[in-house]
Image: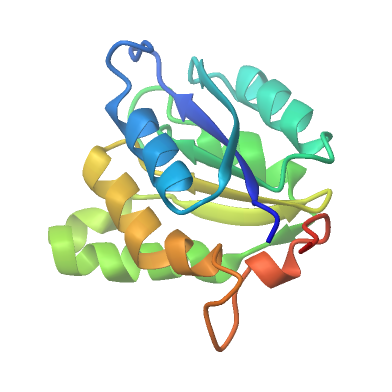
Length: 167
């Protein structure tokens, strides 16, 4: 089976490669699930800087999935949804809804401040998660792990990735 190729983008005005715990977690989750880590980057919380990197990855036929962490709240310069949504050809409404539903069991009504989003752009799946390591773990273990597994039934996103081909 071919590996799904994922790129990870941490969005933060303060994180560096030395202290990017959420990016480290996501990268490890991707590799542990048997997928390929195509690229990883950290970008300041700036709509146009986020779009530039996401657009670059979306344009690469070898990238199947982009997962972002950070910038989904309401404070300061949080602007990940505003950066990514205009790039989507289709919104995955259920991703954010399901993330908040699951997160409610863990953090209660604080989940209302999460603006996790998902979409499809140029055949690339894009998922944005909050920046905490707990949110990354929730998003990966409770949603993305199964949805990026071609064997998960009754359905999964892996089988719908237009550019992903099993060998």
